[in-house]
Image (cartoon, rainbow over all chains, first blue to last red; front, side, top):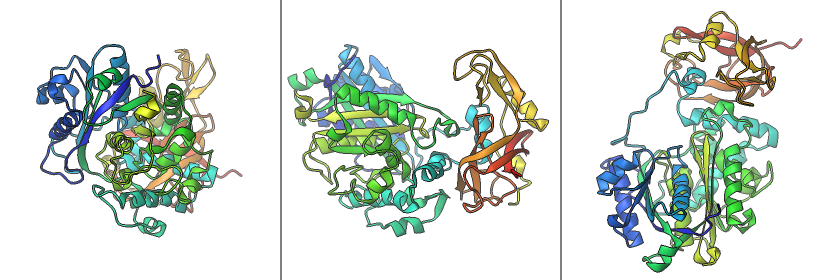
Length: 386
Length: 142
């Protein structure tokens, strides 16, 4: 079933504050962004019949907001969950299961207010076959393949560091970004090692914040226009590889990135060269490198040089992570919501670091440590041909 | 690299019925993995059906314990029980029989200079709680 341009994102908002927000619980961050996104859509809670959330239960979010949903999506596969929620909402709306889906994110990643406790299960595959070796969160797992990638492709430490430099250039123009001061490759390589070969400035921020989206049918978006131009869902994809980073099929490429993006490109009927603006989930500096190659924007082993040469920086041919990314903007834990928010801002011409003439934006999310992936190809009415 | 005696504080695996045979082996100094008789492929981590072809016609075998260093990183922040060892490597090795597994590296400095990808390794065992986990040390190829 191809549901290209049959649904649209008509409301989008982040929490008023992001970064360090110790006076808000995770649940209230879901709720505040939901209220703002519905206002952005010109809708009220009464219009919503579907709710999707990750981190907290969509039922908890719905009840808190006074919504009684008849479509529920609790897909929780890490930071890309919200991209999957949009995909599922587009399919469900096209199938007539629901009409208006509210997708929420809220995470007190830094202040840990109202967050479920972290639990380690020593009987799980991770607990038996990874945790005994001293893993300590994503920095000790996610970059596991980087040295292998370097050996096979010749990627240099300087090129890896240039990812953080390129994104800081974007963040300089984004008032809401946590870090905005200019950064050099030398600065990145001089920052302390977290997990060799990754330095502090090659690892994402840990912040508080939230965001929400309102998805409805393209038909309703036309019949009952809101205050903002609809952003059409042109193509979507999702895929999973492995919950254990040690069991990746090939440490130099993400199978889930390849599969989810291929599905999205096929549905949208476009090629990478048609994409005007790109968001690639950057929990660590190597992710945009894998993303550029796995999505087909550059050839094998070319991404490091491509970024280092400035092609993804302001003024470059492929503007990427224009909010500054997880490395400079914000990273609550499940950062994927913020990828979609920036794609929407660029398509509506309201981004802080606005790229001219964005008609098609692609957001590539990751979940876990290359465990899962979600892809959204979003476009303006002109790109959708409606 | 000095290996801490503080093994009791490192995270210990807790076997399930499906993995008990593996952990019984490590206590005896044996590395055991499973092989599928339908597609002939060896696989890891332990489970009763083959991830390559879904067959349940699988059996355990003791493997050589020979491996190569496939990839690694060096953590500069200690996980519980690893305070005396930072920085320490968390590695993925590829067994000669094919499967890969996460491990620690012993008998070698845990530095980028000493740890060369594809270097030859052999299995050893270290206590974690009341279990023993496979770790790997350099192996002379002469």
